Image: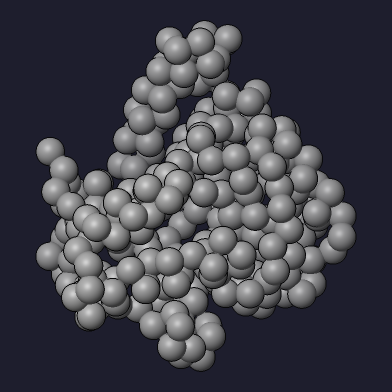
Length: 279
């Protein structure tokens, strides 16, 4: 099975890394050429770490040989998985080009975390039936779940092919509804937003207290630590996308605290500062 992954950021690199560790051939591409060597370096580090810890039997070089970085989209792929930024116009442009470039035998998948798949199918007039969503979670290597989202025109055979791919990647596929945010991110919005309102608007508790309560109740992370891990910019963009697609449903209204942090460049762990500071 041969996969083209478009987008060499955190999610695209994570999908590529997982695939090559499971024996699949991957082409990785990005609109920014300097993103490719960075992603390759990060993937090699993670593969080497997995080998050193005994989670991987094959030598690092053998695994890495299954990864190729390319600037042009290759022939002979079975799947295309896009992991570009969560912007509808950008994804429309990409799927329009993919619809022209590849025949109906190539499955197209979006790793969108919030945009309804039927909206993406609107950009693929030739073969909308071979488009759906495969929503991986961060960090891809450790998160076992993948949401499979069928758009209005997706044919049933896609689900069988998607389940086969997800199983090859060692993960569990669940079918999620084609609604803004799907299942996990839609349900998770109030978890973040109510915590933000409780601390910033109502001044009822500190963020440290909120996180401690949730972690004490068995959650792996409280909402503020989790937003820092995911990336405040990523979390904000997903919330805004769901809010816009639900015609301004107040339950999903983005919170200005996140926007203030973004304006200062405090995006969470990846920048060393978000709601918390990291050394």
